Length: 362
Image 1 (tube, rainbow, N blue to C red):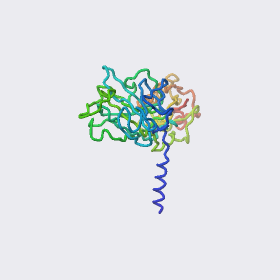
Image 2 (image 1 turned 180 degrees about the horizontal axis):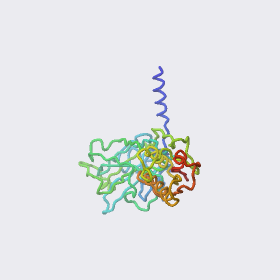
Image 3 (image 1 turned 90 degrees about the vertical axis):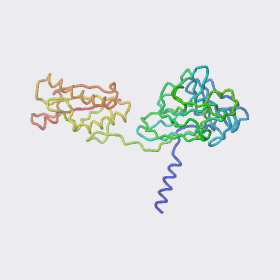
Image 4 (image 1 turned 45 degrees about the vertical axis):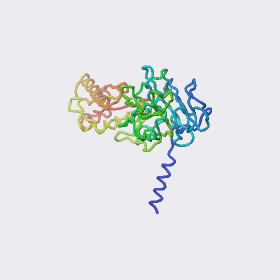
């Protein structure tokens, strides 16, 4: 009995998972579409825009014209769910000029760093398309776009589904697109379309096509429906440094277990576990900067220790940079033996004073 209760709970949790996409099935509209549905402001339907000057369409059962469901200018198709769907040109041969259309949705709330999200939608080649192509993709980004052309999107896709075969018996059926994305954090816009140029996009003139629609005689046009972005994996716990329960900005932290070769600034291998934690903190807090300060003991001259402390701070900075942290987020400074933590000339005092300190800024 307990097992069934657990399974029911998990199933219930899955069913109520929040879809971050507004109007995922294009059921809502500003006005029942009669024909081509472009707005001068790029608004296609509630929650959806065109990020370029391309002109996507919506189709709905409310329409009795070119934008109807199941029959419309682009072909014949029932909606995958509900009563509506969208349509975009994914490829077209047009006087030597590349033309694309894209759908852009704002996500609420933005994605959480490190969490897993399933991006899913259904697509199908419209039955009036004379050409079939091998790909479609999506982009998750923290920026909204309003690009003043209708060419290939200037930013690469987060993921492209590329089919081995360009055209099969299933090409004209609703096909599920699904991909699990690990968020970098802050992504709040989804863009759907073909992000490849005409050279990369494999295309095929559909054999035995009976279509006579002139606008699709040299094109591949996709219907899109039931778009979802759903969190499927938890957000990792906020990383911390050894000895500290939490990390805040504008406070000083002494890095534990950071060791260098004697009288040198080369990091010992035993330092890497703690340095990895520092990298995790910087990746988790993408807007933070860090000030790395080097300190030495009292042995040696003032000038020598000042230079050594600066080099040791630089070694920590180099490790961060080598692991993908932007150099503009890192500042180094050396204090030599000027600011000891404790007084004394024994080894215990000196080992305490030989240290690297961090201060995070936001």
